Image (cartoon, rainbow, N blue to C red; front, side, top):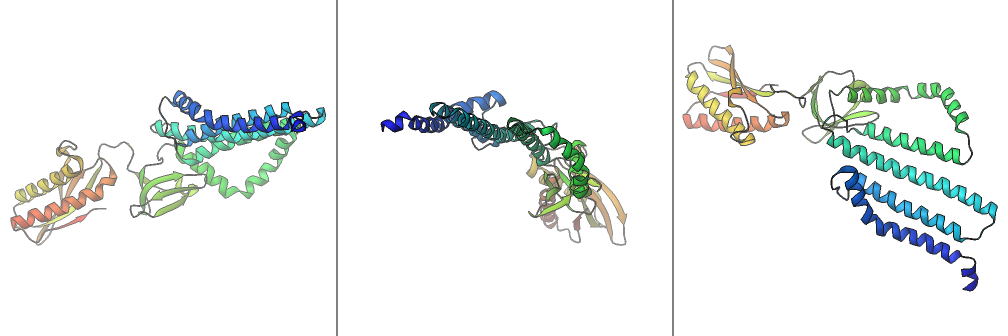
Length: 339
């Protein structure tokens, strides 16, 4: 035991173990306060920024324990210098990965709070992470005594060939950035493509844009194609959003009475979704579109707050309309949604 203590190896092991234990002990104490200082809010323990800060604190104590252990060990000057250098590089790499996670978590948090000012798509999140990793890698190489200038020069020369080989990938990358920075579409928007497909924008990554349809399936669109296609964004600020249904009524019917029934069904359906004061009744309107041998066709406009409400409002409206027409003994009425 004396020989072990004399060589200070036991103290070195204790230093490392103490660093790990202190990291776990103080991590739960420091991180909540640090997170609150950075975000002015209480973070959920499962949030990416919270877990990244926790890892950063724990790794900091672990690296400190390793440096303390190296000081206890009585090694030759050359060996200690070499181990110290490798430990320094290891620390740089560990902190680089930790800061990359912190940067990614912070970007996720602030983009969700920026209310459209900062896009939340993963393509920008990945760029932030890659910039931090690249910077840390260059610092680690410089610490090892490897000059990064020739490497950067070689990268510049080979960049053209690299870009040609990844032309399609780079095209999708810059197209995705163009779509985001144009601020005409962002994650969470409901859009309809010129092909007729529509869905909620789930993500815009470095290669593709993904839309989630109402049935749960996902449409994958290359960013280069997305930047060139024509689409309708229903989530942009719009005070004139509505849905339409085409109603066919007998021409012998009392139009005023039929309009009254339609208005009642419209009010009922909108009240079911938005409440009595949640919509503007004056926005409900009719438009007669055709006059046939036996029927008159009209279109009713129902105001919407969100395009996602369209299907539910149509369903409630048709059920209410059917019930009222039956109670009035009116037949030969048809209704269909207008695309």
